[in-house]
Amino acid sequence: MDRRKFVKNSLWTTAGIGLLSGLYAWQIEPFWLEFVKKKMPIKNLPESLVGKTLMQISDIHIGNRFDYQYIIDSFKTAQAYSPDFVVYTGDYISYQDATQFEQLGEVLTHTVKGKLGTIGILGNHDYGRNWAQQEVADQVANQLEDAGIGLLKNQQKELAGLNIIGLDDYWGLNFKPEDVMNAYEPSKANLVLCHNPDVCDLPVWNGYDGWILSGHTHGGQCKPPFLAAPMLPVKNKRYAQGQVDLEDGRTLYINRAVGHLWQVRFNVRPEITLFKLERG
Image (tube, rainbow, N blue to C red; front, side, top):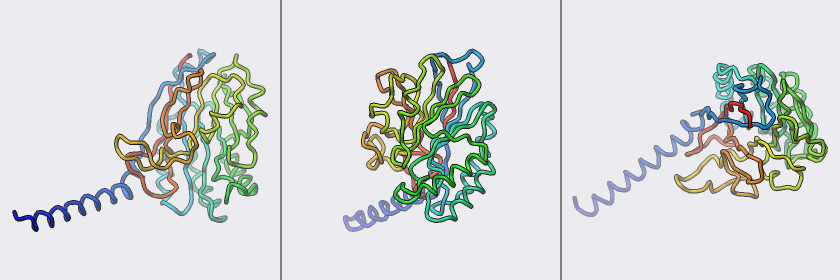
């Protein structure tokens, strides 16, 4: 093969690989949901809850940027796991206008619920444009409550012996973690829900030393193999995805999101997490 033909063939091969990679990142991986299974040891966990399951669903982002029938299908698949607890860690919509409320209502008719309880918190996108529209957050909150998702706004609620602490969104209008963390009782079996993992670095924890479930990052959505994700919406770039030991008794878990801001993913599959509860 002469040099000219070699270069030409190489260019065609490169173009073909690029086209296939782009097609994969656009049409395949965004809908290739992974159910990640983890163990969750919790201090003071009642014996009656040992072996129970807790499902985390995060960042469904209902809107016009991808076909949300995929979220409905994902919920139907998740229901088959029959979780004992289900927690939702924010960003239910990608708000543009009131159409998203209708779309969210359609999806919430398929809400995944826990046999022992279902709890949620808000994310930044649930506060509308610039995270500053209280009326949008109120509408989302009302729809969640109507669908059977108990919403925590800097509050805590005990379900069958598991005390769930829910923080409102860091970037939203009502972030007041001290309202609930000042009442933290270490003698309980505690779990914190916090949409944005950057909150882990704030001095608001009052000695808390358990699990923190977050979302927000989507794992970056696109990540080169063996390298860090180039785009993460957090100050602490250590907070990308998965389990992070905060080295002070706290364990952070960052869900990669089941939905997307934009319909593109590469090397960061969408995720629903299923935890098995254990005594810490």
